[in-house]
Image (cartoon, rainbow, N blue to C red; front, side, top):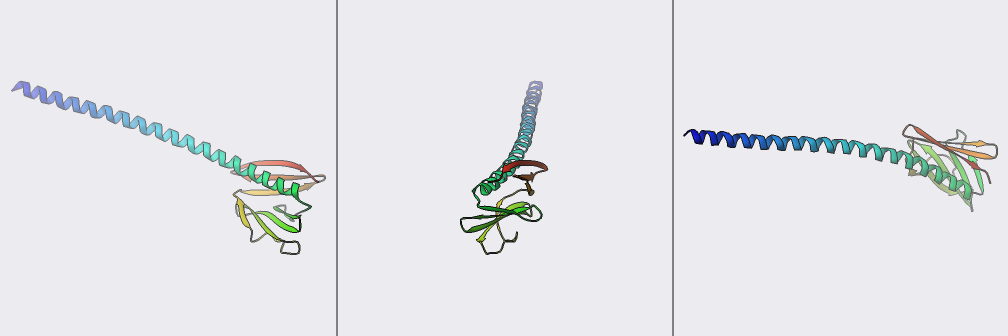
Length: 149
């Protein structure tokens, strides 16, 4: 009878050791997955901030280059662009860059446009022979100088 007691205890000990080994493996995998998820989140967050500000700057720059006439809205949060008989108002409000198209004689206010891209803030300044376009996204600022004409 002593042999059955020893073999039962050995089986229980082997089972417990196997379960502990599996538990250690599971905990290690959860730690690795958690670390990888945090890294991925930081990478995608940085990419979205960089993409958002770069895309907004390129969008506004290309619109200004193609324009016949450009007027900056009073507070610098947008521009009015005239090109080929169409007037476009591009402005920053509520965490996004908006654009609205109208006729030359139409409403030039910075309201009622369609969302182009999400950004925190856009400022456009007239500096002599250049425009300065500054975009704030995720606490970081990007700016570019664009020559007139």
